[in-house]
Length: 101
Ligand SMILES: Cc1cc2nc3c(=O)[nH]c(=O)nc-3n(C[C@H](O)[C@H](O)[C@H](O)COP(=O)(O)OP(=O)(O)OC[C@H]3O[C@@H](n4cnc5c(N)ncnc54)[C@H](O)[C@@H]3O)c2cc1C
Image 1 (tube, rainbow, N blue to C red):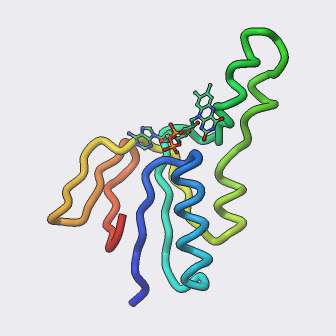
Image 2 (cartoon, rainbow, N blue to C red):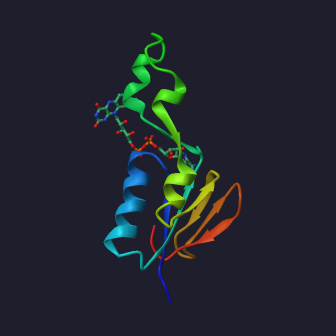
């Protein structure tokens, strides 16, 4: 049975982790990303927003198409509890089982 990897967060850390695991294992793993935000935020450029040098659209992009294009399930929800012994994460959408997180 394919192993399940659950990644919490979809920004620099989560995006990198999810894509790396998926590709390092040649796709032979089910990867799910749960993120409270449905957009990637290039936060180093936040500094330019108050000065009108960048807009929100300039420094963000939607996560779902990016993950789905790599065969990764994306869930827009916030994790609310982690049960490490049961290997489950409760979120505002559902509860997810994992082998690795
Ligand atoms: C103005 C600014 C400039 C920066 N410049 C640099 C730089 O030049 N070089 C550099 O290396 N670093 C820089 N950094 C730091 C860098 O942005 C952070 O180190 C990096 O964003 C951390 O990535 P992360 O994915 O761990 O966390 P974050 O980027 O904070 O992402 C957290 C993710 O978790 C999600 N999340 C939060 N709570 C939950 C929850 N309960 N359930 C599910 N998902 C959740 C969020 O929606 C988000 O997707 C800068 C930061 C800022 C603010």
